[in-house]
Every structure is written in C-alpha cells, then in structure tokens.
Image (cartoon, rainbow, N blue to C red; front, side, top):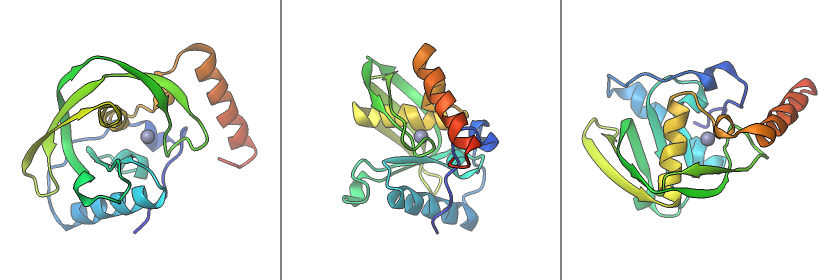
Length: 169
Ligand SMILES: [Zn+2]
C-alpha cells in the first residue's frame, strides 16, 4: 500500500525514531509499504519517519526497482565506519522541488538487521554512502535542509512557508 509521505515542517518528520523490537506481521507490512511508496514516488530511499512511523527503519534502492539485488532494508541501523567527504546535490521526497549541495561522507558502513531480524553489514561509497547518511538523518528527525547553513537554508525555508500559506505544501 502506498502511504502519504510527510513533508518538511510536519511535526512527526522532525521527531527521533525508536528501535524496532518486534519482527512481526505489522512490521513486514510496514516495510512492504515503504518499498512500494519509495518506488511509486519514485525515489532511491525512504525512512519510516517520512511515513509518520517512529521506528528505525529505512529502505534504499539506487536502481529504483530495476534490480532486485539493489534493494536494502535496514532495521535499527548504526554506522560502524565513515570516512572521506563528498559534496553533491541532494533532494528529498519530503521536500519535493528543492535541491541543495550537502557535505556527506565518501564511504559509510552501516550495521543493522534485515526485515527478519538477522544481522547485516552493508558498505556504501559515493551515492550509496550519501543515501545511508540521508536516511540515518531522517531516523533522528533531521532533513537535509537542516544540514544547510545561511542564505541557502533561509531561502528554502521561506519558500516552503510561502507554499504552506497558499495551501500548496
Ligand atoms: Zn529524505
């Protein structure tokens, strides 16, 4: 089932998620919904917090469904290693129409559980490392706009407030 994606400014998007403790049917349904919602958007990553669910889960698929082996489902993820830096344009399904350059690690290793509660470790470089950091931020209630500084951030926040006032956000 495709679920609505929260937008920047909606309270639940900015809250910290808690660890998953039960690998039951509702969790499996939630993960299926996350994958379906990500593909439908379409996007390359989605965190549970973007659906208003305060659980530490994210899904990433750089192929957007073209290659089943590219699908990563991470539950209760933590970083075990991060190094280097990259500066690239970034966007978010919770802030459609806005892009900005964000500094991210060049390489990131994430350890967590798969959808059945089994341990897994995945290493990412470049875009995948960026996606890991972006989705991990969501689980702490942080959107890429919050990572920006100065004029660029003010400009985006002002535009979003304007869109909200006119009912277009
Ligand atoms: Zn995002």
